[in-house]
Length: 104
Image 1 (cartoon, rainbow, N blue to C red):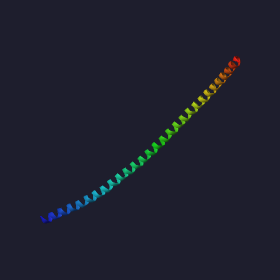
Image 2 (cartoon, rainbow, N blue to C red; image 1 turned 30 degrees about the horizontal axis):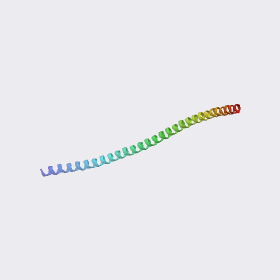
Image 3 (tube, one colour; image 1 turned 90 degrees about the horizontal axis):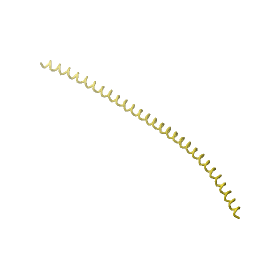
Image 4 (cartoon, helix red, strand yellow; image 1 turned 45 degrees about the vertical axis):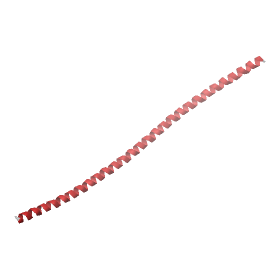
């Protein structure tokens, strides 16, 4: 009985040591996989930030181009309107001077 107990205990101790080593290896493997996932997450996050930054810059450039185009159109329209008003004012000045000359 004692020999059988000692034999069983030795087998169980050996099995326990093997399980502990297996558990230690599994923990190390798990830690490496978690680290890999964290690293991949950081890389993907950085890539997303770069992509968002690029898209924002593109949107800003597009909006600037639209604003510049609208501003150029408005400027041309204002210049044409100013020329038309200048002609109208010149006509009114001539007409007024003619009326003054006739009244004198």
